[in-house]
Amino acid sequence: MTLAISTAFPQVVPPVVHNYPHLLVHYGELALKGRNRHRFIQRLIEELRAKCRPLGTCRIRMLQNRIWCAFADAVSWDTLSAIARNTFGIANAHGMWQTLPTLAAIEAQAMACARADNFDSFAVRCRRVEKQGALTSQEVCIRVGRAIELATGARVNLDAPAWTLWVTLVGQDAFVGCNREEGPGGFPVGISGRVACLLSGGIDSPVAAWRMMRRGCRVDFIHFHSAPFTSAASQEKVAELVRLLARWQGIGRLAMVPFGRIQEEIATNAPSAYRIVLYRRLMLRIAESLARAAGCEALVTGESMGQVASQTLSNLAAIDAVATCPVLRPLIGKDKQEIVDEAKRIGTYAVSIEPHSDCCQYLEPRNPATHSSADELSVIEQEMNLAALVAQGIETAAWQTIG
Ligand code: ATP
Ligand code: MG
Image (cartoon, rainbow, N blue to C red):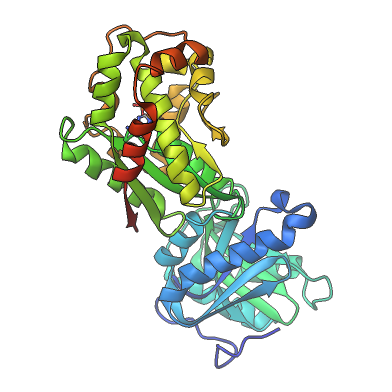
């Protein structure tokens, strides 16, 4: 199978070797058992199509068990590797040049790559995808390895090479390149449905949102703020977190919900020890209504068992009691350090630790209760005009699209 996009064979590598006309994408095999395989691949192809579209003409098709993106004009590895890193469902991806499946053509391409880089040790890794090809991977590794050794003086190191040449043989095509990027794995965004994450601006909830995206959910965001009692900067911070997370799914929809008046109502009418859990129950009711209207099937929070007083088992149960949709807590069994490490890895940590005033710090009780029950909280809530408070939150919510 040969694409009509490239004009001549063998392609001569231009001076910029790290610009590639082909991206070969491997998806996570483990995720692909059973009937979901086709849906998974189609969703990943749609996602890649959307991300490759701004880069010019690009044809995407299956090549055995890889997804093959062929660009009319070579694209820089910086751009291609960012796509690989930020697209869920990708296990890894290679920047490639296409050439004839002959030893001479592969060697010529390999030498052009090798001459463009400096390295003192290297490995040649060859994969033959179809068994009926004329060449074996062994032949390619030996011939190309020897040529690189002679031309550069570098030695072969198969365990920890400073530089690696990748060759893939597929039927009548050979692909050669020297860049590979690990993908994030998981499922393509959207395949598992849509959820809404309660995003606070702290460290945990962005990580929770990312974890659900990685499991294939498209995530909308809901933030409660206490303006004018809390600063505008905390809203900007949350918008910045959504912008960072939107890299993984294209755009992020964010609802800003004014919460200060509701908090005042709770502070006036309820024992202070129960305030935080009552805030959460109000947040959940408002968030569920907004989420359902936006087409979301579940809520997501960054809560983790025992992290703070409001996250004990009985308090979480009392919070959950007001929701009729599933409340997903992907961080429930993680300790803080694990969450911090993940926040650093996905790039949200630096923004999360910027100082901000979350609405829960406003009118925060000195001794929050570590135990409550849905029944006793319902009795307290009867002192308030709950329906009006929830309606007010829903009516004053403002959606924006970021990314
Ligand atoms: P985070 O958990 O995001 O680091 P935090 O630890 O300050 O922030 P907690 O008090 O632990 O927040 O809140 C637990 C969860 O409740 C958050 O992870 C988030 O899902 C939700 N939440 C708290 N405050 C808000 C808010 N102002 N807007 C939206 N969701 C919130
Ligand atoms: Mg937290």
